[in-house]
Image 1: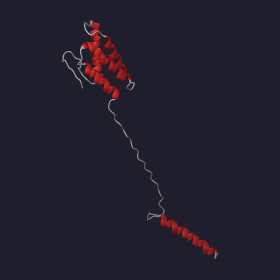
Image 2: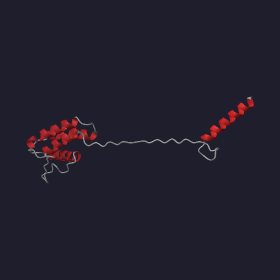
Image 3: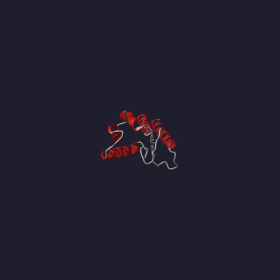
Image 4: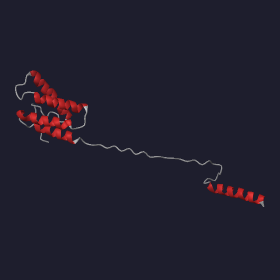
Length: 142
């Protein structure tokens, strides 16, 4: 009886193993394939609120009388100081502050060169090419 029980167990195991095979060739090894998906999310944000506010002041200053432009430039510099710290932002703040120190009229040639250099940099920084150009007389409140 004992022999019969052992053979029954062998056949039972063989039957279970045969039932596990999905392949007609039962000698084929099973393989496991693992796949993973990587999702990359890129968030594009526009300019910061501080930059937008500073740009608005830069634009409005272009329409103001020279005697009050410094008020717009000071507000723009203050707005930028609250924005993200970047080398370009620090340069823009320094240029705005330098513009404020220049006289409203009667610039020396050195001061005129400083004005032109600062305005050129700031027009690039704010993406307002030629905004303060006296040749074109641009004015923007936008």
